Length: 115
Image 1 (cartoon, rainbow, N blue to C red):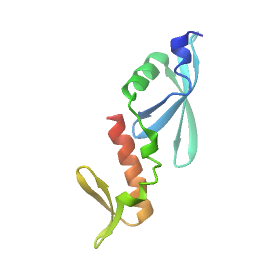
Image 2 (tube, rainbow, N blue to C red):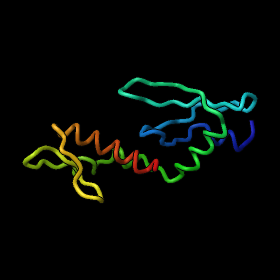
Image 3 (spheres, rainbow, N blue to C red):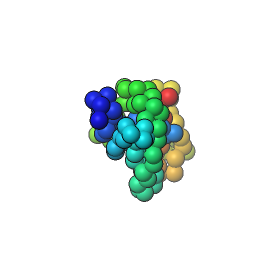
């Protein structure tokens, strides 16, 4: 396997608001296996290597530590009309619970980094 293709394995990228990981690449078929999770269920799909390369290069600045950061909960606040999370653009919400606000914040971070 070429070194460029080998470097794709294990790489992460954001796609449609979800974090994806390149599990395996196959230069012969020009396809790669990509894993992602939705609602706790793991999915494995095949993608053309050209698309995987494009997605990985677009997500070169993806920082996952922000999604699970210890500071995440400090960005969630309770207001009179519900739970919100703090973003650069202001408060986002309302959410019914702190957990929903944290989940919304995680999705917001992934969305912002994949834009």
